[in-house]
Image (cartoon, rainbow, N blue to C red; front, top):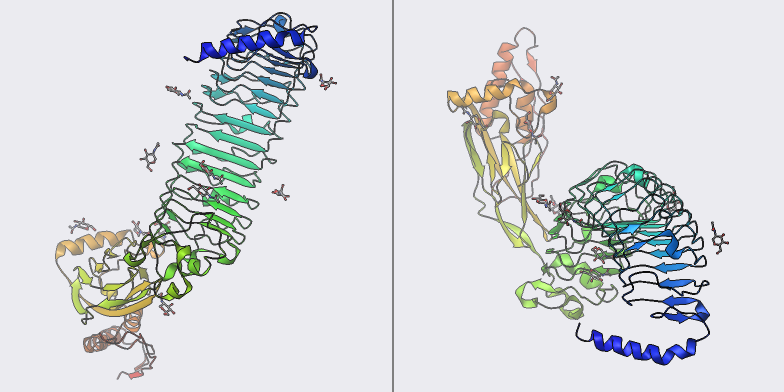
Length: 605
Ligand SMILES: *[C@@H]1O[C@H](CO)[C@@H](O)[C@H](O)[C@H]1NC(C)=O
Ligand SMILES: *[C@@H]1O[C@H](CO)[C@@H](O)[C@H](O)[C@H]1NC(C)=O
Ligand SMILES: *[C@@H]1O[C@H](CO)[C@@H](O)[C@H](O)[C@H]1NC(C)=O
Ligand SMILES: *[C@@H]1O[C@H](CO)[C@@H](O)[C@H](O)[C@H]1NC(C)=O
Ligand SMILES: *[C@@H]1O[C@H](CO)[C@@H](O)[C@H](O)[C@H]1NC(C)=O
Ligand SMILES: *[C@@H]1O[C@H](CO)[C@@H](O)[C@H](O)[C@H]1NC(C)=O
Ligand SMILES: *[C@@H]1O[C@H](CO)[C@@H](O)[C@H](O)[C@H]1NC(C)=O
Ligand SMILES: *[C@@H]1O[C@H](CO)[C@@H](O)[C@H](O)[C@H]1NC(C)=O
Ligand SMILES: *[C@@H]1O[C@H](CO)[C@@H](O)[C@H](O)[C@H]1NC(C)=O
Ligand SMILES: *[C@@H]1O[C@H](CO)[C@@H](O)[C@H](O)[C@H]1NC(C)=O
């Protein structure tokens, strides 16, 4: 502020020097006039009202930065040639109806940063030539119906930075020419589909800094011409309905700085012409397989600063034309080639700012380090220690295979695990593997179900790889296969379980019968439970075929067959033929998993 008096003094001096040259034309005392362009500049002149002496043919009038408090019809009525009027940064709190109604040629009207609380109906009436209206930075609380109804040529409307809590359903009626709309920094908690539905010509919609919690169905359904939609800084946004973008044909979409934790796959489904998608700064930690599968024309994807930890296999599946990927500033340890639909379309890749582990999974980037555009920011290795802090584009060709390797998993402690348990007991099988990168461990059950650390229910895999079966059932008997796998390959290991049909105690049995009550064919899942003694022939065959036959198993099998046969006596013929295939017992040293089919023919007399 200290320099201001000096500056205004200088300005005054300049004014005194230049004043005589513009003589002959009327000009308000404190303003600068440029007769050639018919412009009058009264910016920052501490004017408290529209000054006298403005030439009647003025086209551009700048009254910004003064202390005007209101605008009445009479103030400006004479200046019918005005095309641009700037009233920004005044103290205007009252606009009279028809305040501008004689300015038929007005094209640009700026009322930014005033004190407007309400725009009365008719304030902008007759302004059919207006193309730009800036109402941002006021104190508007509500936009009334028909506020803008005469503004059919309006192309840009700024209503940001107000205290808007409500936009009336017909507020935008008449704005058929509006191409761009920005609504920002309001206390709006919803945007009704109906109020937007009048904006048929809208091409770009920016909605920033709003307190909206969810995007409901068909919010934008009538905006068929919209090409770009920006949703930025909605800290409370958590839910995007699968139909919220229905009716839109966007080529550009940005949903950033919100609270969504997953990619809104369902909502994106209809946007088949989308070329650019920005999902930066949302707490999306995992990009799931095929999450963007319908965006077949997408060329640019930005997922910056989302705390992304992993991109699953085919995370970018479906993106057949992806050219630019920006995943900088995340927590990715790797970015595998298998995540992409094809890495051959990729031209620009930003993956810097991630704790990358430079092993075989990044080999594909290394091989392309001379042709890929890293946008000036080459990825940097965070591990292993020998290459820490080394930029990928600084590796020489010869170093290519010294680093960037993986170590195939090796399952340690291959002790034979052949357990016999009673019904209802807890059974654990160990499976620990070493490898680089750390192998993922999952198990295959005798029923060929995949059990991973994410499985829930009675049979789970603990984080370090141990399989845990709670309340063991007879049907759990069989061979379990542990598979440890990483980018370098996989290793397998087999364990067998035999559950005998004697319950541990009555309480557990009681508990189990409680389960049985609500079990039927359609809700069989991981927590399968079966009636205690429904040991039919099918069950025996399945569990036998899937698993291995221990000696005990064979004996039990025969006894049970005898049991079944004796119970079915009279209905069955004496000749009994059983045909099945089974897997060879896989000892601790064999890991090939070779199985052989055999045929058994039994005769029962
Ligand atoms: C818009 O401006 C043109 C001149 O630029 C003028 O001829 C026309 O009358 C104006 N339209 C209206 C509705 O006043
Ligand atoms: C939103 O409302 C709160 C009070 O509920 C107020 O403090 C805040 O200034 C408002 N923000 C805007 C942008 O109007
Ligand atoms: C964002 O979501 C998390 C839960 O997912 C919640 O705890 C947090 O309060 C939300 N933040 C805001 C600003 O709503
Ligand atoms: C959607 O937009 C694309 C251009 O981005 C255009 O080629 C296509 O015809 C539009 N489709 C419809 C149904 O308007
Ligand atoms: C994506 O959104 C973020 C946050 O709004 C912004 O900073 C960034 O510039 C956007 N990126 C592109 C390419 O538009
Ligand atoms: C990628 O994101 C970073 C922000 O982390 C930004 O500075 C950069 O311009 C973006 N690059 C491209 C090519 O979009
Ligand atoms: C294990 O590796 C082999 C080849 O090394 C591969 O064919 C097989 O699909 C892998 N199995 C799993 C479950 O990853
Ligand atoms: C029955 O099982 C549930 C868990 O499945 C357990 O919490 C409960 O203690 C059991 N009750 C008895 C009587 O065993
Ligand atoms: C099985 O249970 C499901 C719900 O768990 C139910 O909808 C279905 O009708 C049941 N089926 C039979 C055959 O009882
Ligand atoms: C399995 O079924 C039980 C009851 O039938 C149900 O409570 C449970 O949620 C189901 N689990 C899964 C993973 O579907």
